[in-house]
Length: 248
Image (cartoon, rainbow, N blue to C red; front, top):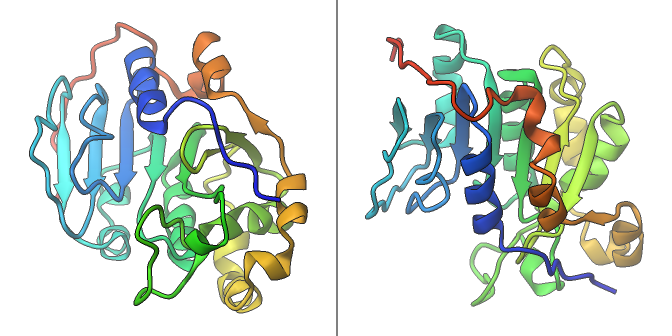
């Protein structure tokens, strides 16, 4: 039986998070119209191969770096390492195939502050149809693809990480904390993991098994408490972030 996330909408959660917490650097992969990173007050890096921004995406940010390219190309460019960037928060919402999200996670963790948090979107599907990998026959409504697989993959391969599955509508947010930027377990075993999970459907894995592997936490409760999960890498409320020169 599928369990549908019924908490606060994820856009509202992200907006409230950025109003409460200030981070040195924020990364978002899969931005498209820019609605999710428009409220951000931190120095921001936005990556999407096809931007369609029609709103003010700069806002109160002291710096905004926009990369209209795939996330693979962005990470391969070495921009983060070249500029000594350590991310306090990242939101990964790119291609909805698990091998893409797994690569994004691997590359993002390597650039994170150890106290930071990586948010994974669309990992809690509410039905079988939305989990398809068939790009030629996508559902007319919500499509999560098979990024749900990141939850069992991380549970099996990175038990050192802490996964908090937030009940944000419509398809959940997974907050990954306890990060180890030097850890190479996932990258060293990437081909094996992809081979093990590529042909696996959520029915074959077991819908009840999947939902029994975690408990959804309340996004509203996290907000009411002042976002304690994100405080370790937060710079607080009032500290001004000064933009500095970066190397393209």
